[in-house]
Image 1 (cartoon, rainbow, N blue to C red):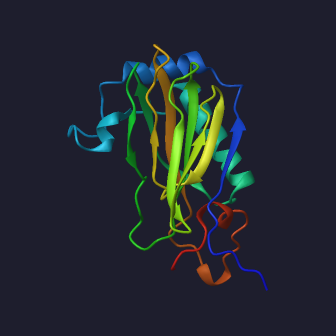
Image 2: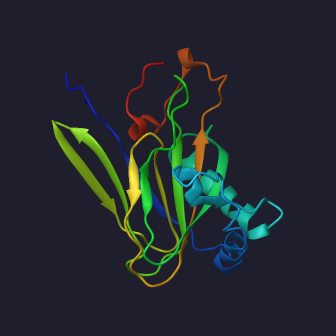
Image 3: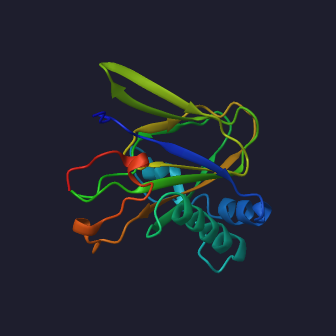
Length: 196
């Protein structure tokens, strides 16, 4: 019987029917409202995302969640969302979206609302068969990318000469999930096996 030892997947979709200009304007207006003031923390690279009082921002969050519920798991819910403003010649530090203290991994997502050519691709990196694997994903405007929040990743330098804007978030399953009767749907295709 075949049994995979490692399975970490990602998927991508397009969201073209939201007001990107309104999203970008609202996100850029908050670019200095960082999630952390410490320059050595990756949260210092991220900004507060406009709340649902901005209709285009609310619509984007709803559309991302609907895709995740249809394609990954029907019980996934957004738990946090932030903006990432990458100016020319900036990059993003190597990071993960954190563990959940023994709980199953979250599904993370990134939506590119402004992505000029050469704005810095996202790169996933992990060990497999004693080799460092680097999996690069092309940045494209309107693309939303889903992946396990525990996969280490970084963003290459933005050499476009323009600002790149992306919106990211984490989705998780309910904490009171009955794991004895758990139907993983497509969730395990993203996070693999966990000790739970």
